[in-house]
Length: 157
Image (tube, rainbow, N blue to C red; front, side):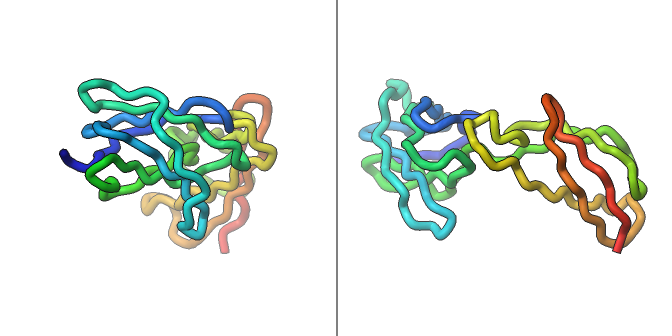
């Protein structure tokens, strides 16, 4: 028996909802550890459902504060070599190729609005400045609206 390999995990999961973890070797008695920011174990959840071929397992997101958590998946053979993150902020597209101070940008992605996973505090995300943009550093302010988070580019420092 081999240790689990995680390919992906559910997105936008609220406490007490089901988290699906996909990959290989979810055999034996799979379990998922939810880790705190300091790396300590918040809780260890047994699998509610597994695939007989070992391609996925499902666990309940514990009654923890809503947010992003590192998951450590294991089975009878041991723990996966790499951890994964549930509810990770995932920017996927930005509305502009370049920027200038005062430009409003639209960022499209997952888990940018805390309401996706029943959270109360909005996501804080600082996108990197691509090399093709003007050199220097910049800061981005996020204002989460009804559907799309809107960014305003501030003056470069």
